[in-house]
Length: 173
Picture 1 (spheres, rainbow, N blue to C red):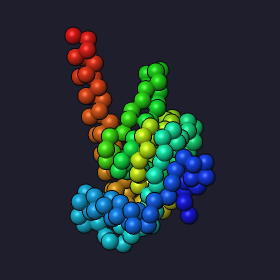
Picture 2: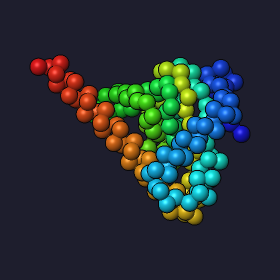
Picture 3: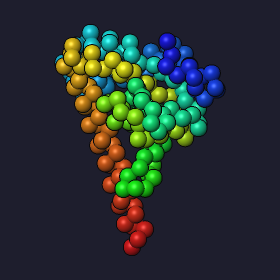
Picture 4: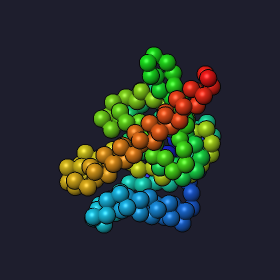
């Protein structure tokens, strides 16, 4: 089953070839294996079974404010802009190449405080976590993948934020 049928039907996403999907999923699992060398192959098989590869088109809205979302994204190409409110102001972040993209509050099944819009066509591996709590209870490594992924995402955001602050300082001087 494809989680993105509603976008495919509206022409905002496309299914990729099985060969492309298999290659991208294998690359993602290899990244997990590098993060956690002792991860059991049985867990990688579970993660692989939850992966979908999709080509999102520009202007596709993949997460709307208030929606519950059950995916994290690994961007291979293209770009997603994430809108959110911070300190009472609307802010936006654009993903970088090979970024993890997720709405962290959705890990806790809260309505999203963010909106995600594709700003450049691209290929993404999406990983469904709708039953993550089951896997987290049955396999510690699955929980650790989630924690490490969220940690990596936060580091990416902070790195971009620091660059932006430095850039703003240079403009002010």
